[in-house]
Length: 367
Figure 1 (cartoon, rainbow, N blue to C red):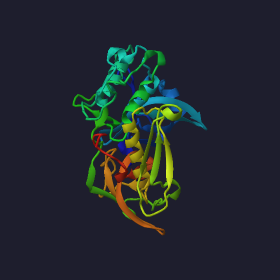
Figure 2: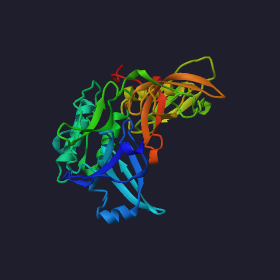
Figure 3: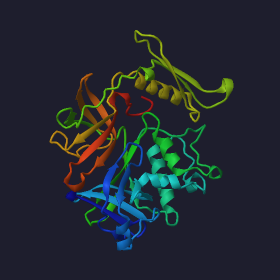
Figure 4: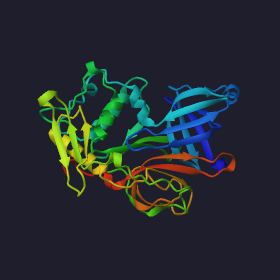
């Protein structure tokens, strides 16, 4: 199986092929919901010395390919010695924004924004980043629209130059509210052989409920994972605090009576200015904390029930677990994945990071 994998390196600005086949071992890579995803692997220093090539973090893009399809792409961020090997660390396209700032203000005149679709602001953030000299990564953001809103007439969404706001933080804040658009990073070959670097935007959700694939212990789950029943995290009442000081601090409580003791938790959100937003965040947190029984991670093998790569980030999948302690089944949402290609003919496997599907709210935040 290892022979099907190829890792190759491209110059970040020119697109020139730097290394057509990088002999990486111990490779792990994957994508995540509302994040850049990652890639890591090890390399013999002798290869770079013999080839005369380098992997400078601000100049190199790296890709993982299998069977002629791109499975992952991103920026090399570090190449460090580890024992007698070099450890390579890379991250997906949105990681670039963590090293970029708005030094013009209001994304160079695109803002401020009032009652604006966050999808538009995300596209404007990328447009601003990529219009600067040597800043064009070639990333294309989906044309998705949403009914979510950022900023109000009374309190517009601002990006002040004198605060030197980080562009990555801007995007993180736009997608973190319950009911907001969601994104992940992707790479794909185009018909002319070039790579399309994408930010996939989803609304009212990213991914879908997948009835044609499933994961079961004894079938395609490698070993029975634990089912977590965490009473320490349980709460049927959430007290949320927002911006402001003293008696002017914004405050919301969401509570239900469920036949048991009242169990409270505090959610501190100092950047939230609207009481309505605070109330929605409190309700979402209370719902999450009342869930009972969860599988948070599974290691899976390639199987007809769910071939490796048959899922997308954000998908809901049926997970069935039987072990010595519990029998559990439920819909779980894939929030991240990590592929581990088998070295020397070994078996390809993947680890899926999961969350209870019913802990998510999709659609307009007003719903």
